Amino acid sequence: MLRFSICAILLAAAASAQPTPKGWYPHEGGLLKYRVNIRFGEEPDTMPDGFKFGRVSAVATNREATEVYVFQRGKKADPIVVFDTKGKYLRSWGKGIFGNPHGMRVDKAGNVWVTDNGDHQVMKFDRNGKLLLTLGIKGKAATDNKTFNRPTDLAFSPDGKFFYVSDGYGNSRVVKFTMDGKYVMDWGKKGKGPGEFNTPHSIAIDSKGTVYVSDRENNRIQIFDANGKFLRQWDTLGATQNLFITPKDEMWMITHRNNIENLTYDTLAGRIMKIELATGKVLGAMESPGHWLDAATNGEIYIGSLTGNVFRWYPGWLDRGLGETEGLTPANQR
Image (cartoon, rainbow, N blue to C red; front, side, top):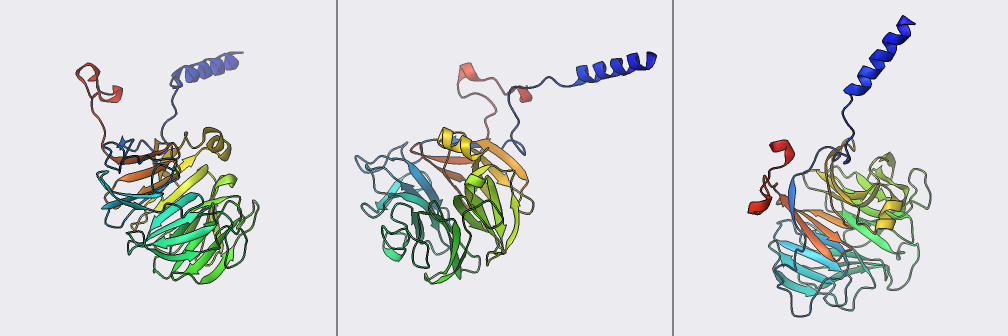
């Protein structure tokens, strides 16, 4: 009886010593301390009269971080709108070209590549909008070496010799091409096993040529060598919308807890995460809706959001409120 009483007392003491549960969960890996401009490109509004973003599918910056390219679906502006990093309108193009804008990347030479999942095409433009290359047959959905079925994203090999297309909503594969558009190979099919996909939504490549694919509806990221050999997977990062790897091998993503949350909230419940490339460990996180992410070389992060916004995140954190009546410091700094 004495032994039972002592055990009961110890258990009660241990329970009372536990911290009171908090209503808010912590940010995975710690809070990323950035501030945000939630209407980049529209506040201040320097676009031509009548221009307004519809759903913003993608955003990309050039290597010098001097230009920001926005890929949007609305009828009140050109599909591709270009700004400087302060949000000043520079130029635009693409009216009548695309079935449904989806993905966008800028290569080392400053060329702008896009995926059109409405017309099943991949296109390459120069920085001023001149069409340089088209892959896929407009309006034809198929699965051979000349066609796509709703392609989603693309990525470039570090040696500059190849690019890869995640294909996509209709197909469940990755397609490898030479930089001049010659088919090399493809891999993947519909399924849940290694090397199988359910909506390969984004693709990124590190400095060693390793290929990372967001297998979004399977709630995982699959990792391959340059020729499609399955290496490993991460299944702890949710339903990832978009992957971005910087030239310094820093991985960023915009993700959701799972694919059902993503679909239910229409991308509104997302988080930006910084990831340790070697392990998949989360190094930091912060809330943001979003469909696309670009980590610019100047340290800023741009998010293309289906809400019709471009979010510009820049390093910084407030130490007090913005007005005289809201000047209290955060609780952890008092």
